[in-house]
Length: 360
Image (cartoon, rainbow, N blue to C red; front, side, top):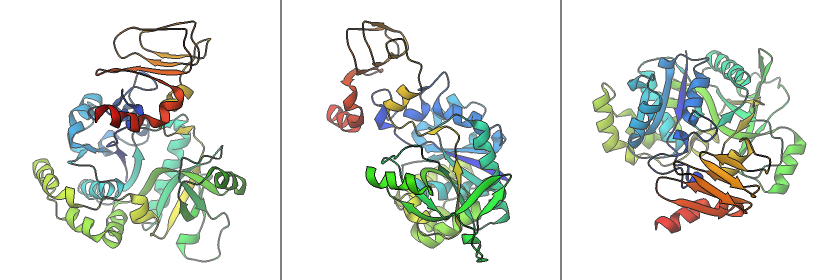
């Protein structure tokens, strides 16, 4: 039984000032009429019924989730009182989902990534689910076939050859013409030169943070590798929404603050990867919005009520007020509820630091 877990607790600081602590990027319509989380749910719902799609998010975002996803059952919103990274978040969600679907296969996906070819992505998700259903101790991750030597992503190195060893952790598979390879290693973000070497070798993929595994396997691996977190989460009363929320508030802040990559993926056996080519982007900064947005004849991206005069190569975002730009180039201009922000594009990668200086 395939279920989806959408992780929607990030702060989206690289999209400041439009993305705020109250409404981070997953709840913004950066690339169209629909918000990032709405696009994610709509995509998954083509394969998975809505009652098997779960969203894990911060308690402060419950109202936004319900506003943007009115048809999602309330019980399918898993609330964290505080953010404690991906490992405890996934473990908590696995135990929660197991209440409703005892032998669930759980596909974990981010809420704020762009996927252009939904059909290819869903075919991969389905193949990964089939593999995990037959191999309950296996973990399948979806890696992105790189098209450039990117130093901003972690990588997954996989084994290309099929081993004669009967150990399932070292066997490649093929489901509906989709290749599934055993993982050799998870690799930290490399230098540009090392990334070029990865691209030449051909058996490295970008780590997109998407995983498919059985809920029982998630729980057992949490117990094995981060037992203190397991003990805390396992003690949370899930017999009612009220009890769950109350106990999460008192207990969950004490779990380990650790990513699933460090806590489990770098230690577990039987990890496999499916190479994916489905038009993926993590939409990590305003540059990504610029890449995927329609440009005018002067290479400007204008969103909202914007008038551009004798200006070129700007990204201008109006939230409510009209914005007029004249005689400028290579600027980011963003109007939010709180302020109007203007910077040269070479400052976009420094937005987190700029936000700290502005907000103190």
